Image 1 (cartoon, rainbow, N blue to C red):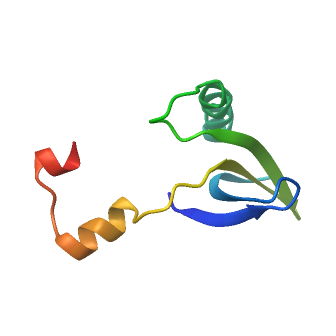
Image 2 (image 1 turned 30 degrees about the vertical axis):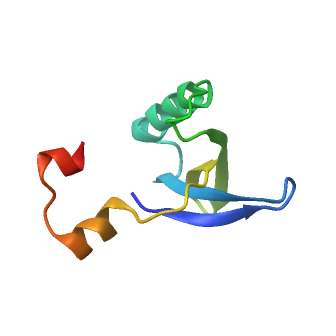
Length: 94
């Protein structure tokens, strides 16, 4: 899943946006699981865990898309790192 960088206009901060589910006509079991996980993740507060700020829903026609609004952490993502450097050793992955 790819995250996009966005802007929280109310609080004036950069955030990460992650789409977690699209379901024609309703919410799927996967989307419900993602919602439960988002609620649990939002309760965590640790320097090494990205903060979850919100779970949002967008309805377009008959599709419902859910997304997480999370703390933005600058840096390359794993896919980009592997493209640049190739396969990671176990130590690098850890």
